[in-house]
Length: 154
Image (tube, rainbow, N blue to C red; front, side, top):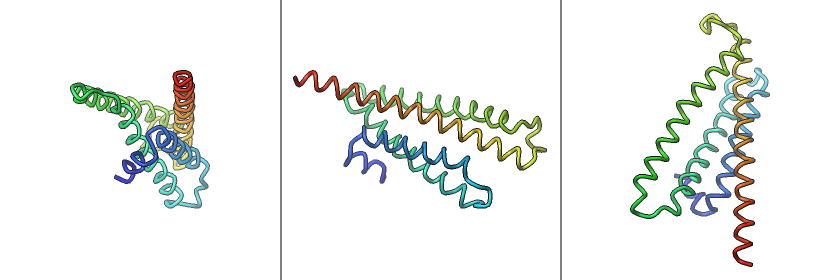
């Protein structure tokens, strides 16, 4: 609910970028967090990732549904949900493979704690890079939209 209110007040474009920045920051901080910070060192960045995702999702849904005709809202909402679920399943599978490769252990049940930590660091570093790419796409898209709007108003 707070994410939806922020999107309504500040706009979908700004909150899309803010959500991606928050997720990227959490994913970038997590692999660098020293082990001595323990559970709070894991929960803090994970909370930032979660809050950023909620903000991004609310903004993304708003942006996608903004210009949809009333007769098409059900179909577009269904396609949006389908694409989000396909991304979730595919992303979880790929990131699981990244974790397994990063840990370098054939049997995860017998993996050493430092191998598991290495797998986590690599996984979140890859996530940060992917989110940075999404952020670059979002910023480029916003810049193109501004240029198109200024051309139309001229």
